[in-house]
Image (cartoon, rainbow, N blue to C red):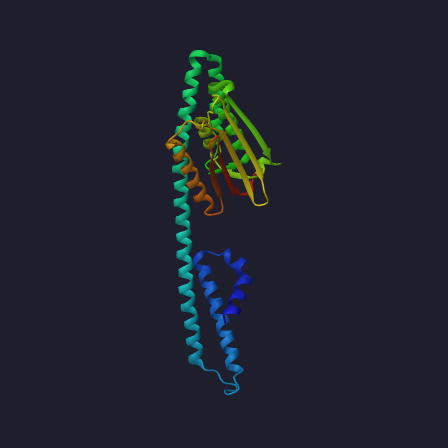
Amino acid sequence: MLLLSCSVLCLVRDSVATLEYLNGVLCTALLVVASCLLVELLAQTLDPTKPNSLDLSRFVRVALASFLVFLVVTRIFHLLTILDSRSKAEAESRLIALQSKIQPHFLFNSLNTISELVQSEPEEAERAIHSLSILFRSSLENSNNQHSLKNEISLCNRYLELEQWRFDSDLQVRWNIVIENSYKWLIPKLVLQPIIENAIKYGRSLDGCIDILIDIRETKQDVSIFVENSKDSRVIETRSGHGIALDNIRERLSVLFDDAYAFKIRDSEEKYSILVRVPKVVNPAA
């Protein structure tokens, strides 16, 4: 009965899926009951102890039992579907809340940089405002929580332009992108930018310079992002702001990818590095 019911449902699943919910449930129930009754009819017909006989009462009991079991199983799957939808909605709300925590902080830091340029270099301040407008247009261009790796890199370049005006030659950023088509893969929005921001904030070395390495590459299953910054071993930072930003990123990754991601921190005397690995998600617009 079980094998026949599963086989029949497998064969007609595409047709049943196009029906409205109640019609689909009724149609599926009839198919399950019919399959069970067919097996029962064959069993009774082939019973050597009862040739050419049909136990009608047993036949009806099997039909009712099959129908009741089907209703229970259908209800369970329906509740699981509702639970899954609610979980996705809650996860979406959490992502929006977490992302909103990043954007104001990001905006305020950029405005502080521009305010410093207004007094000393008005023309550069105008260019910085233009970069900031392009950056935010890119980050808010749609309501999705993910965008292409290419867009994330472009967003970070805009941010680094603003920071370059602030730190001038003291800020040295080296990019090493070992990936053919950065537009092909989706990654969470603002996952790289906060890491770079904290690398700049805490990355001043003994000579006063900030040296940052950004390495992005792909494996068969993942997109790997590695950020390493210099640090002054003589300075002991509480890194409270740093921890909040990293916890934020880690939680967003957990909501999006469950356990299918990696987030590793390595802290030595002269270097601080973060490695993020996220599963490859193909960009449908690519």
